[in-house]
Length: 110
Length: 113
Image 1: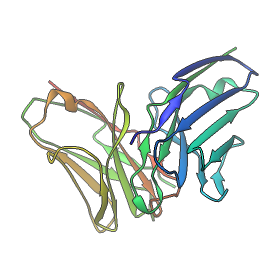
Image 2 (image 1 turned 90 degrees about the vertical axis):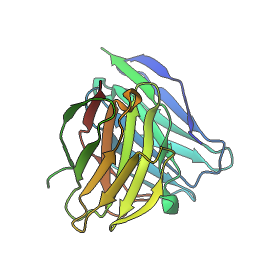
Image 3 (image 1 turned 180 degrees about the horizontal axis):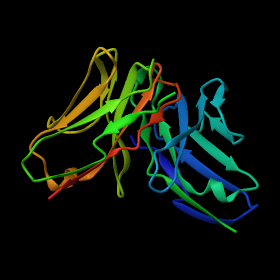
C-alpha cells in the first residue's frame, strides 16, 4: 500500500518553514526520506525506525508516530537548495521492499 | 568512492522488443533495488537482490525480470516492450538493504515507440 504524502506541492520564500507529512494505512516499522532535484537521482535524507532511532546526514528533523502510522519532515529556515521533490518510503526492514509515496514538490524562491 | 553506475543512460526501443539495463553498485554493497519512475506514479519498486538472491519483488508483470551476479552487479530485463514501459529506471545500492541508506544511480531513460 503506497503511503500518502501531503501536501502535494508547496512554495516557500527563503527562510520560511515547511512540514511534509507521510501517512500509511499499514503499521509502520520504519520511514525513509529522500529528496530528488530535477534531473538528478534521489538522495538519502533520513531513516526513522520504530523505537525512536534515527539515521541521517543532514540537519533536517523529522518525527515518526508509530501509533498514528505517520511521519513528518520539518524543513526550517529553508534555503534555495532545499528545492526538489521529497519522497517518503515505507516497508523497509526485513521486507526489503520500499514503497514510496508520490512525492511532495517543494519550491523555495528568493 | 565511485557511485552507482547505470548503463545505458538513454534507450529508444520499439514495441515488442526486449531490453536489458545494467547497474553497478558501490563497491562493497551487496543489495541492489530497482525502481520505475513515471510522472504519474512516482517511484515504484520492481525488485531487490542481495547476494544473487531476489528477496522481494513489486507488482509488475512477469515481463520484468532481473538478476544479480556474484560481483553484485545487477541487470533487469523487460521483454515484449509496451508503450507504457516508457519511464526512468533507477537502481539503488546499499550495504545490506532493509533499513540502511541507499544510493541511487542516475537512471536509464527508456522510451518505447
